[in-house]
Image 1 (cartoon, rainbow, N blue to C red):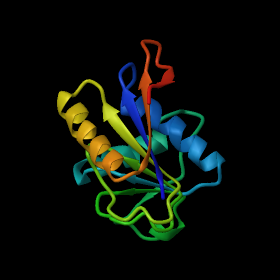
Image 2 (cartoon, helix red, strand yellow):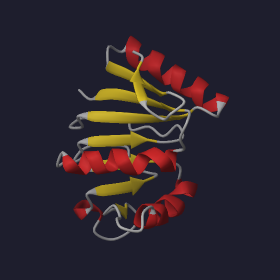
Image 3 (cartoon, helix red, strand yellow):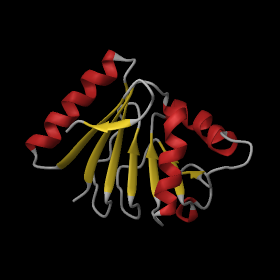
Length: 148
């Protein structure tokens, strides 16, 4: 059973926090699935190669060759976490089969009431199902505080 960690972004953007979380994931020796809407794949793909002048995050997309060899896989279509340790859910994306994954990180855009409401619904559904949940919110300096 995967733990679900909700990250409520307020002081930072997704692009400001995702690379650091992915780096920590790779440091653990984990393989990550980043699930998002199809229209965001190309932009995120480019961003992860260029987010810092002195670093990049090795990754690929599930619509390109050798997806099974990628330490970080970007996807709009995968519905199973099989083969992944960590799953990042962006812009309402979901994965139906979380078997095998240790953790799911649900990223919440705190500047969008639609995002906040949608993820409150997800939290309630997962809580009612008895899933293990944690909720982290950024303070004004961008530090994470565990709220639940």
